[in-house]
Image 1 (cartoon, rainbow, N blue to C red):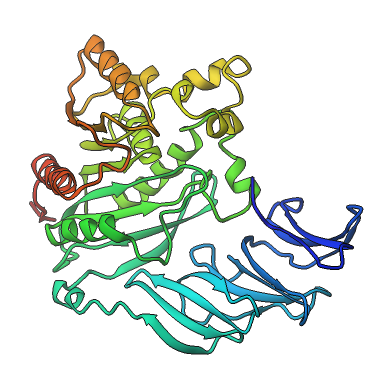
Image 2: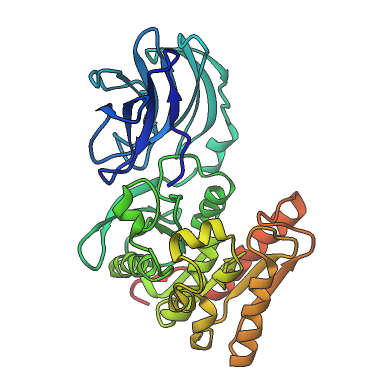
Length: 406
């Protein structure tokens, strides 16, 4: 994995560098000839960002997953490898910027119930002032449903992190429809103690409409070491989906879930995963929504694709098996396909190729395109249209909750 954890000391004799040599990214001190002096951090967690080196005091500051892979915290360690200390105190996600003198830092913080806020701290973590407290009083009026973090076993017993939002007015005697939100790709996490923005608020809306929301981080995602991420090497969409289906099996086992009304949706890699789920596990889901999905990895950025699948001529079968188009004829349920026509990340060509395959296979689907919109389908009008359409689509295909006895 690429990183920018490189720091040369002013004496010209040493430098800092990070490595995944142990299976987790950690900081190492080297002499200028490249000989290892000592590791500065170690353990089954990973360094995320090098925030700075206070040479005068002999301290290295960095953010890491030591407390939890679902959070990011600020730490310090001395250059002799001692004194590892967590500085940030509030549970959640911290992004840090230090002053040039390392006497203070700015902390951009959020968690699952706290929108981003910016504060000024002393180097020891004491808060001096809020730069922007971002108290959103209106949120209290919405009565947001609590988010439950849990662990679900994979098929082989590997614990998988997951999260759930139960419907408003939850009654365990009823059976609710489920919306599975998936991303599933490398270098990203969904199950995090961080503010989720508009998608989180839309999930809250759907919980208010009577849906249970479920998400899971499969192997191949970020934050849990090299072996966890490398599981997907040379074949995308296989191990990720196996883990996602283990999560769905868990959800279906809950007495308050209607196993016949499970929907799935995702964006970008999540849209890709949605298609793989609908096409290769067609009896599991009632419907789905795939936004801006990759359908043919030969179309995607080489710097991203080839590090996981290698080059097409070296792994043609991996590319074929990793494409939803390969399985399009297996689709059984109607689903919604969404794409911006000016998408310069996942090209609109991917959707065109899939549509062609679906038509030839005579499979049912719905399509919405956004002229002039890129990968994020941004803009107030487009966003309102998109999420209103998604709301209506799930309501129409999954309907309202029903009593357990009905």
